[in-house]
View (cartoon, rainbow, N blue to C red):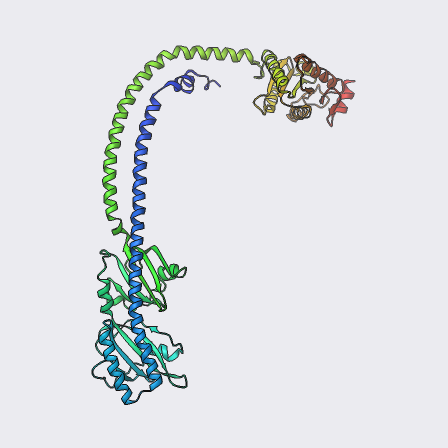
Length: 534
């Protein structure tokens, strides 16, 4: 209490703080500077999001172009294979027919720039016919992946195999193959079209994807067919366990995500999609660092300009704060006398309304509060409750333990009463001697009785030794009254008199109990007290 009412605390906590411009000036400068920085951060982050969104759209369009190119390339190649397989299965493989097929294949390869060659292999892997000018002899492709695939699978759809080097030319090629069946449905060979990998590479090289961008095409099993930047060591690599296949393609055939590559560790904005009808996956990715390169340059410039502006504002704010501080110190000295006087007046007012022993309100304060609450209850037609408390056998207590102990006993009971005031309007006061009162605005009789009983029980539970009391501890007797006062019919003294009568009734009935006009609430030990008092 001393600290809260000290002069410095009063000056900083009330009048002086309200009128000081220094904190407002400092706060204003800080808010302006922080606002500028916050706006810059927000604008920079917003610009970053826009940059990434544009890059995502660009990569998605690029992936669409790559996918469409892959689809068109494979579709043209597969169409040629479909016709070739149908012709072989229908017309057979006589020498005359093979010569006619050879001419047709040579013409097809000349028409389609992506084709490296078209080949037909017998069921044992030997070469039957192809698009080359001279049919090479003593070659067998039974060891190739595509041949083994069709040999062990009866499916008639196209198969895109891993990249291989051509046995005839040594070039890197991508294979598209279909199974040839004999009339009885058994395996009869393989029709193969090879696509020159340079065809895809030249197409991918036309796109501007930065130094660390990437484009790749893989088959449905996750085998890498081609990648830009080109690296022969990566051809045929299994990437089915990479995040793109494992985490993203499993959720949908098309999408865009920021993915850190397991091949080179670069984080890219990656747009991917599966090619319809054919087991292919394409991806177009832009390096996130490269995408954000220009954004970073702009951010550095913006923050440099913003930092200079913040320093300028801070400097001006500092000068202004110094001037305000000088003025505030002068005002503080002028206000010192007024604050001291206010503190003295409040201290005197508090002492005038406070009981010096218990710290509760005194009789003067209680009388004023009773009048005010009584009038308020009349206007609002609400109930007003009053509790009157008297310490049982208190004279004996003073005789046995002395007045110092008696004062301490009253202080402890005063703390119980202070704790019972749960609402701002409740008031506990020392009425006189060992008598105390509790005023409960807006409380009916039942509520007042409940509070009174809690006080009675709390005092007894403190177990303050009292050999002059049959229970051996200090107890209290309580009188209670509560009613809704009627204008021009009731006076505040009626409430006090009724509670006082109830208090005497509690004493006559045996003490350590709560009584009101019509009845008493007797405690478990009230019978022994009653017998003792009689």
